[in-house]
Image (tube, rainbow, N blue to C red):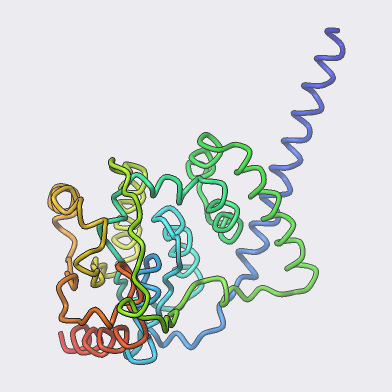
Length: 287
């Protein structure tokens, strides 16, 4: 029995060491080969989750690229920003979404919940620190292991096919054509509680921008007056002043829009995005 246990543990250790070796080798190789196929004369980046993704049409914002993506917690925004800093010649400014639902405890699920992790983690695993890997593994080991398997499989395919362009994996403006006045939005049940993890990773983004001398500003994209997460406004403002008072905050939550400019309570449609994008272009390029 002792021999069996010893052999089993030895095999597990060998397997884990082999996995670490393969992961490290693949990750370092990809870091050298990674590229982004964009004209980034664009020195300004807009980042965040779906509110940002659907609101800022970068075709109407000078020298700006929208790299926001649906369902993206700050944990994954940090990995994406590390990638962009390493692969873009010059980034002057980052405008990062900071809005009510991003302090909510549901952001924990957006970080290590099964559905989110297997969708988000494999894209930028090579940029995660040891601490980041521990966060995922500790909170959802099975989901982490599945994500790691997907990452290694997709990375090896990239190497075989010599496809190192990540441009399509970075997010971007998403046009919504629906109208809240034509199809009423369903209210989501809001869980009470604050995501300390998401706030922790927002602080890491602030520190990363400071380290690379990138000007960072928070933006709050317009939300419909009936948006359910506005219920935490007091907590939102308390956290903003206590934790991020030294970060510039551009609050567009009350930007003048009609209900017909919204696709639902949290997202602008194409018409609303055009109005906001033209205003945002004037705002940031006439400072």
